[in-house]
Image 1 (cartoon, rainbow, N blue to C red):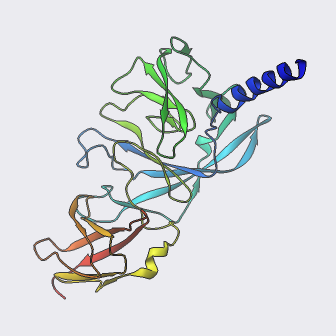
Image 2 (cartoon, one colour):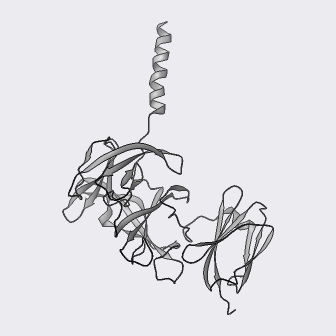
Image 3 (spheres, rainbow, N blue to C red):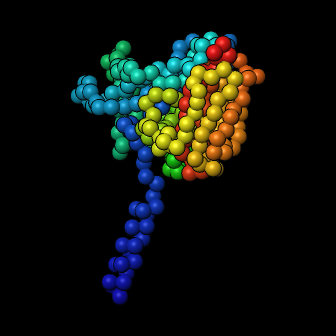
Length: 309
């Protein structure tokens, strides 16, 4: 009988260990964050004159006896040239820059994240993922303490359960998410921008799998994306084209989406073995072609329309 009680006790302990929510660390080298800035009155609503950037972590550095993760960034450059620059869709610059201003440190036991402040040679508390509803986040870069209004679980696009912390005072939907960061991006106070300020566009992993899409801003990028097996099964020609181009696809259940140079979808249709796409009614310029197979893989290609050919 004692052995039976011992076995039951072990099962109870194991069940709490198995089903207790795991802490998801923020400083993850297999994740990247696309972060933009907004300027009041800028022609591309929600964007600024400065291009968005893709941030990632790699390696660390020792500062004041503490290890901080190194942050790298790449500019997201616009595919088209009209309307004015820094409007989506974007492609990823191949040049990466180390951002000394954005060295971050994480304590997974305390569930806290700090940013190194090079001006004061100190660190700033960015996030505290251990807080509960009604607690206060004493955020050094916010004059007024931030109150945790609500804490609840969400499931992000990668199927992971994470804690979401809704904060006050706020303008709009202000929050931060375990393993993700804040609505204002990784490095700033977790408040939604008002007229101007940084904001988080998209979070993906290094294999281009979606983790979190903020209001549909996970645009498609042209460089630094692994080759897709669909490339061997699809042919798109000619490029450049004048009025029409052809798509040869061996996937009878594939579909094609076409976007103009400001990210607007202008066509969405199923594919046959061979398809002639007519864009004679559209302006010359750059177009993004996206093809989805029945198993959700995606192939993409940039085409140039030039009616003077």
